[in-house]
Picture 1 (cartoon, helix red, strand yellow):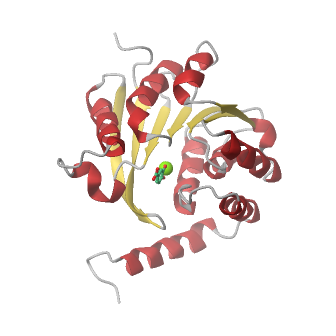
Picture 2 (spheres, rainbow, N blue to C red):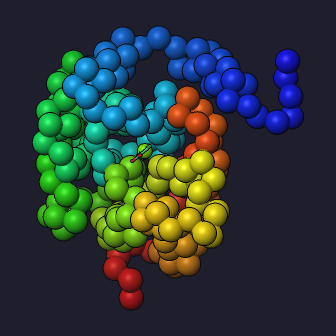
Length: 230
Ligand code: DHB
Ligand code: MG
């Protein structure tokens, strides 16, 4: 029975309905999730509807060069790589070598391996190495939330006017709006959102999400003034 108040059973049913109706069965993605579970990676990859959202953003924006911070097992990476042309490139940064190995196998099996460059290392070390390359058209930030400000700064430096920036996990079960919540990942998320609101390099918004992973949110921004803070 439909109701005005979302319940976990209700929103899971709606998420399944959306995923079944609009995303469908996808052997490469399902195998990627299965292998990442078998390898013991945490079950924190984006939900299917969210992966397809990233894919559509890549297509809508005509992205050719995508930067992802936080590969995990490559689930979102597959979605992004499928959204760019054959001569495009996803550069994805993963701090954990074991995760990168799972991602490499998943990407190759999905047939997008040649479009994806996995850089193993912490974002703070890898990102400066990308300066001087062609700018990125889309940046997806989905790593340690404590570093979101640093990652957003790099998104502006490695982007161009018009670069699309997406930040995962900005709602976190409502914790982001709880001023008494001092967990470092929540504080980091909040600092990132405040930066998106204040920093003249970005125009941004955020949407709450209720999906297979629960109550969370996604921030969406565009770079309006690329470069370092002046
Ligand atoms: C966590 C991280 C994520 O990127 C996510 O989507 C969900 C949970 C975490 O670190 O707990
Ligand atoms: Mg995430």
